[in-house]
Image (cartoon, rainbow, N blue to C red; front, side):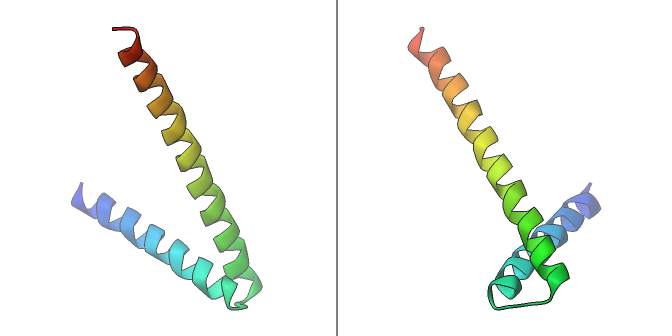
Length: 62
């Protein structure tokens, strides 16, 4: 389990590094990885917003 978490951490750190590198004019592949990383972050953000609104609506009915 710890190896999986370390792997996820490495992938996330690599994605963040590519975002910074692409912002400074890195190679085309780094810009591609940065685009995928930013899109994944946006999906996670939207998912968290949906989950929060669902859980908040449950408390309002009580």
